Length: 68
Image (cartoon, rainbow, N blue to C red):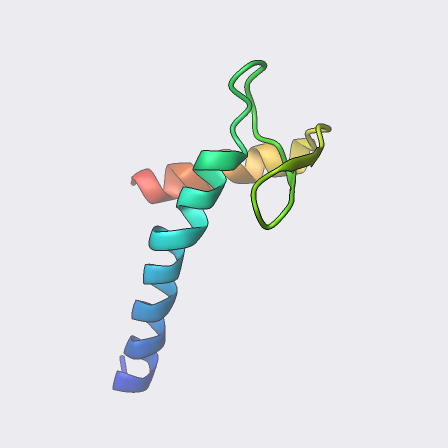
């Protein structure tokens, strides 16, 4: 991989692990009923409590990929 691409890979990995995943884990998990809230403000407040099936599957898939 070129240095140019390696720089971007590092940057995106750091953003994902350092900010994106922690945000979703801290704010989207429904502690009362299970699943993940999908409609969040930038501050993490839930503005719509509907849980869309496609995002539930995506969240489980992404967390599985990160675990492995």
